[in-house]
Length: 278
Ligand code: PDD
Image (tube, rainbow, N blue to C red; front, side, top):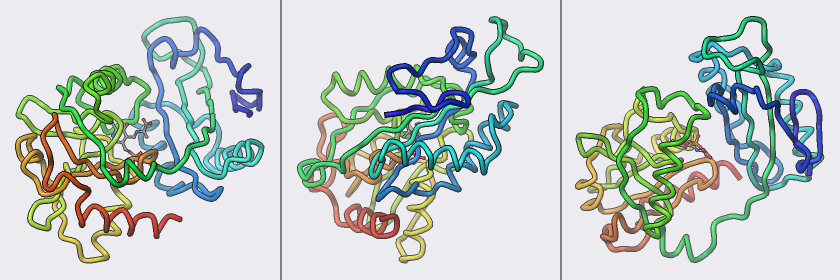
């Protein structure tokens, strides 16, 4: 298996970055995770658009042009025989002696890896997953897909220790913003509800695709905030991301959601999404 590191394809085990890479020292960089199904990148263009947005917001230059990046992604997927899984790429501001202010005249650094991944198990799809609520202690620019993920990993770890699959992050008003690495959704009286796009959440690409698809099929949708209390008394709940696609959530903090089984709206949306991407 190969990785791409700043212009070279190297064996994964020997793929290294410089100790003065600002991604390593300051988390001064951004990333993307793109799913691959049947050897094809899912929603590649919106992912690259979001990369461009994250880079622009942090005033980091593209490490290579967009068409070149697309070529490198394909080259790596082909070399690694990646049919189903994830491509991870990150761009840091570059390598320079440690100093908080932006160094002059450095090139941004690009690292790409691939990972094989199996579809979720039958058991997960039949039973859904458990979620644990955790305080949302992140900064106020969550729309930037920044490498800085400490609050996210702390929340995910706390959820894991609570035997949950994901953490749902709750702000000071009791509102569920999103998951630690997924977007959060509920269904109430046939209406699908998810937090509105803006600085408070990462604008998920799976979220975006699903909103477009659901709208086409006449599903009732509202982008508005919902509280943890509302989520617990919802008819259905689910989460979305590039790695999980759409997974039913059947309990929150040990309390059963709806029937305690994956709900009909969730299952229908999952099917609509999968039919469209695969
Ligand atoms: N996470 N919210 C957060 C905080 C995320 O980190 C992610 C993605 C999402 C879902 O976005 P998308 O549908 O574009 O994957 C929502 C990726 C998968 C990760 O960090 O591994």
